[in-house]
Length: 286
Image (cartoon, rainbow, N blue to C red; front, top):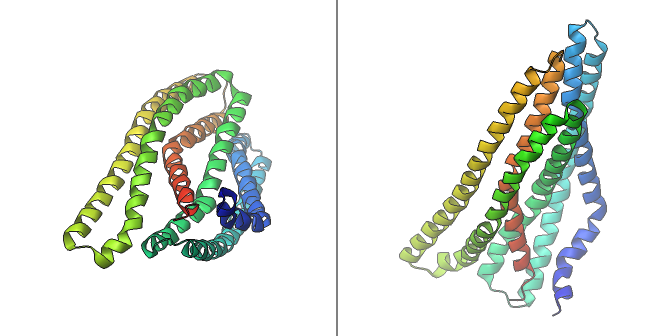
């Protein structure tokens, strides 16, 4: 069977869901863009209240209510779309791979892995988009205030990207090992000795802990650069002549959002690596 034929079970279903996926991702993007305006709206509301002007407060409340209503609707719609996608994808993949002679133990494991792949579509793709919007949007908003703060953010970005680049290969190796062992689990449960079961679960524990430790160490080193940059921004902003309290709040919040988007990189890289390995397995012929 050709590679194109093998991937049809996934690509055709995604094409079938194209409209629904576009709507849910569009709602998520709109939610993130509106959320990007909140720190500015809060800062203006603070400055307005200090000057007895209540209009900025009203604008902030209106934006907040619209964002809340959009979030509630998007969450309810998301669940319906992605649970339906999972049910159809699991049935189609199992049906196809059963005809190709894939073992029952692998099919059982892959039904679980498929759920993780759909979770990636539901949770991680919006998270990646949100991270990009927050990353770029916060830099743009900070540029409106002061270019020195943007320079500090860009300098902080260099070591963060280098550290995450070093994380990619070991994370890929660990995810392959984890998924290999998951595919052997059903066979071990039915046929393996107690000793082999103990070895299996101890190995899974070791791999999960090693993955978590790798993410945590990378995040910890990144946080050192983030702390130094944040201290600079706090001190520089507070010493700016004539700056208002609301403006300080907006600047600090946008910078905090920017560094927060970088904090999520190790976790998102782990998710991307995991789903990449899952999709490779779905495309296998045996």
